[in-house]
Length: 318
Image (tube, rainbow, N blue to C red; front, side, top):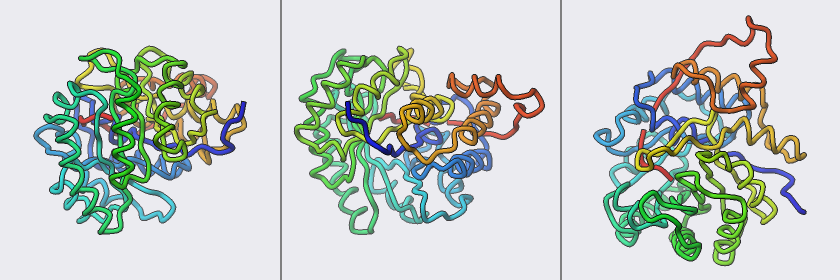
């Protein structure tokens, strides 16, 4: 078996994770979380989104969060944008990278972004063109690659078609999302193999939710295919408002621990990362979903395991 020597971990907790929390996290707490994640060595951290606050009130302060972040040339703070209006707001904040989101399921597209797959690409095209003209990098997301809450199984051909269209549109990378976390290792591998016939593996990322506890196994099954980018959320934050029972993203702590044990470099300090996860979990009033974070906390003396700090939530899922 051949695995990549290094994996880029894309932290999605501050956006994709927190967007599904019922409460509102203070702006300063969100910024503190993102700073802590950058201090831990993460170089790509989703900082928020410019969607309508009517639909995602938890992300209404994205501009304020970005304004509080210390400039770091080595760290990207991508934001999700659904339309040209959102893009203009992002440009006003000086962002260098944005993300657009599509779906491999027609039913999910209708429920999540109120349009068909074809219509979603009509919306994305001017956004991507405007962003590229402004010198921004654009990342694409594909939802429901391994299953849909409304349609059930999704064909790998459908996933490949959407992923290929995003690349042709100008996205530098496409993240394949198991939005409801129903995938299993062989299904995940076969889906990625099919997509890789149309899109080079080096342009693909894995975005697996852990609803049925399969995310790490699914990631492992796909790593040897040449994919070397993994999306994850600190403390296992996340979920999906349109998929009842769907739990959070795979925990960044668990991903970093697994990769480290395999000798795969990430550049992330696991203990600093776990501390950041404890901060946001305390703000949310619960324990981290990450098993690695819990194990590390259990090994610390009580006085050093108590940390304080904070964060919270939004919608529109990859």
